[in-house]
Length: 109
Picture 1 (spheres, rainbow, N blue to C red):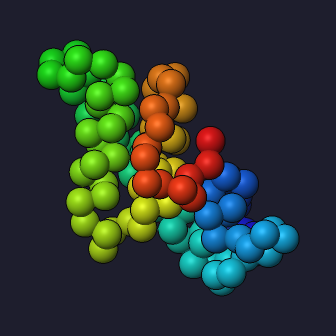
Picture 2 (picture 1 turned 180 degrees about the horizontal axis):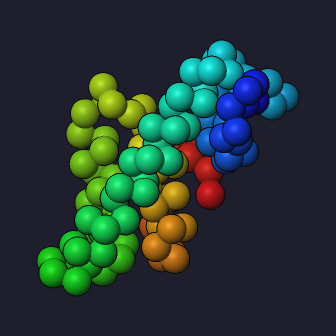
Picture 3 (picture 1 turned 45 degrees about the horizontal axis):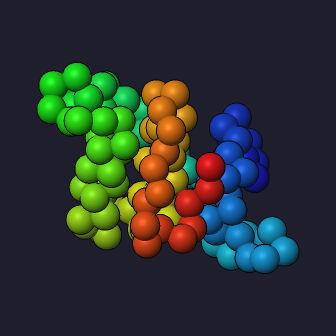
C-alpha cells in the first residue's frame, strides 16, 4: 500500500475503504493520505482528551463520546467511519475502553 512511502496503513483503517474481499475501493494514495490525516488527528487529540478528563468530563467514555460528536458535527473533514476510527485510535493511545459509537458502522478496533 505504501509504494515508496515508509508509512503502512493500519489494517483497521484500510478496511474502511475495502470491499468484502479486502480490495480497496479507493486509490491507495488517497487511502494513505486519509490515514495520515486520521492518525495525526488522533495523536493531536490525546492531550486534549486528558485535559477534558481531568477538568470537565465525568468519565473516559464521556470524553470519547464528546470528541466523536465533535468530529461528526462537520462531515467535510472526516466521514462517519473515519470519525469512529479516530476515536477508537484515540482510545487505544490513551489505553481507555472505547464506548459504542452508535451510528458509526464502519470503524474497526
